[in-house]
Length: 317
Ligand SMILES: NC(=O)c1ccc[n+]([C@@H]2O[C@H](COP(=O)([O-])OP(=O)(O)OC[C@H]3O[C@@H](n4cnc5c(N)ncnc54)[C@H](OP(=O)(O)O)[C@@H]3O)[C@@H](O)[C@H]2O)c1
View 1: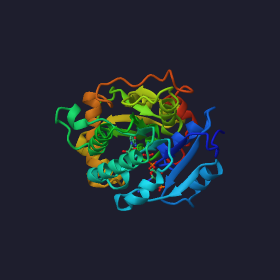
View 2: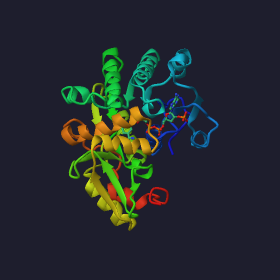
View 3: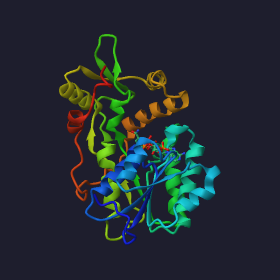
View 4: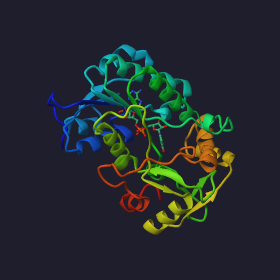
């Protein structure tokens, strides 16, 4: 445990501290031999996840990171040496809001004079697909924030998250009338997807960036715990849980309908469905290779290890 209050240690401001990505960043930094001070943001510092972080020595700040609170947001980064920034598209499904909040975070960190920003971006699907897929706004909005951040002059590294393994524990396995389960996506069974064990592995990449001798301004990091096909993931879940899980390729419209039935708002569902067409045709990272895991503090977790360690009691009922 190396979270410290010593002012000689660098102060890392972490947005989304109680969430998957920010939580993973704090976990990875706390496992480091190097000492860090950590300031985490939440809208409610009394919630259990925030209390647990306080117990670890994280300074938790209650702040709603919206443009209406711009002044407080600027003040909140004061004194930070580095910042991890992530936007929460799933809170509102609005490209405009994601862009304005992302830009505000960049501006606030720049004003605070941080030595480096690690920004959780994604690729520009509209651009990479030559204008074919224009509805994947949660990717495109983040890519526009990346461009803004790079142009702003603040030293910035873009660490992109692969598709979460954890999605399988949150509704991506759908029970079929015959009692089996299906992963139903608008992609071929053999399409390789860059998947990430977000809780365990995402933060490793951020720590790797922060612990380089010189902050690698301009770097793009494409995270992946394993590059794996959906049919292989279905096979491994079956093997590891003893339940029958199959992969079914469905149309983009069916994928959107399925997501709506799982509780996604129609606009969000349509855009997530189109993501799968992009992955199928261009790859999760638009054809660019995933970043080598060689420099990471420990090996990333394979999908098989995730299957073995996960609690499937709610996902396979
Ligand atoms: N699902 C995937 O496979 C995948 C893949 C790549 C990228 N992504 C992207 O990942 C992002 C979400 O990151 P995540 O998975 O870490 O989210 P998460 O687990 O849902 O956590 C969201 C975090 O953001 C905080 N937050 C949300 N709105 C806030 C606000 N207005 N002010 C202050 N804090 C706020 C939450 O804090 P409190 O609730 O404590 O306030 C929480 O800590 C999305 O933009 C998504 O597009 C997802």
